[in-house]
Length: 349
Image (tube, rainbow, N blue to C red; front, side):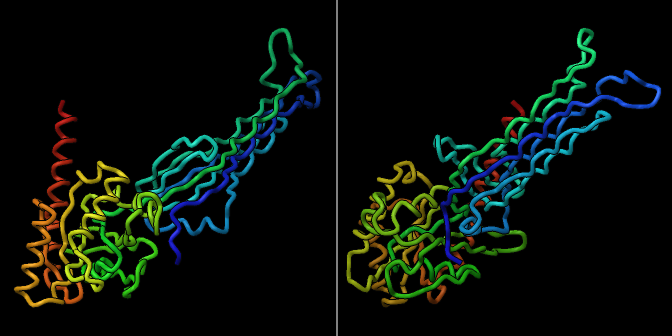
């Protein structure tokens, strides 16, 4: 299925039902008085998060979503039926914008999280509502108000714990295949990955994390070159970035310069992302003799003046990937504990 990370839809809430003018007509009760009921409220439109969806592709064919209208009231003070609300499922990680104003309406990040995007119309009032001491036989009622109509822009940002960052052909797709059950296409061509691939990495009992293979970047990506900014945004939600570097590029380019190109694009897109947790993954060590691979890795680390975690792996043979996975899991668990401790301290204060 083709990945769709941005789409536009129209949502139309139901109109409120009209109130009615009616009078009680029963034998032996000549002046029964008004008994016109109110209309029913119109149905509202909600977007609901779902972990069963990964893309916005379902919205390519259906662009308009309409909730039901409320029905009009009737005699004997009977209220019209409320229009059914409409619940539209979207993937977790969906940002919802008003297309006309650019306003961010909400951010759907959890399963079954509901976001109201179009309010149903209010019901009209029957003539019973207008009865007073000076107006005992009111012949007036009100119409229901129109339901809200909006044009929305939905933007999906991949929700993953770990994001893979690097040039095309750095081995990101191979790495995600090595550590998860995801099966992205692998080939020796630029932009083999045309959309983010998500993989669940199972580490142990009740221990797992989600890893995202983001399409490879090229110079000028922050300005939209190649797949550009379309996928850079997906990296902003990950908790750890793995910068995958090919230590033996087939075009014999300098791995250090290649890595610096990526960092430059990241900085231009969002300088704050350089301060996010980022680990080096020096890939394709199997293409060189062990001593030569070690020397090249050391040169890359020194050339980048790298002080953080660095791993030497071969995604193709899975060498070194198990330790990488264990360390990522330990880091994520540690960060989760820190968050729980912080939240607990806030509640105590």
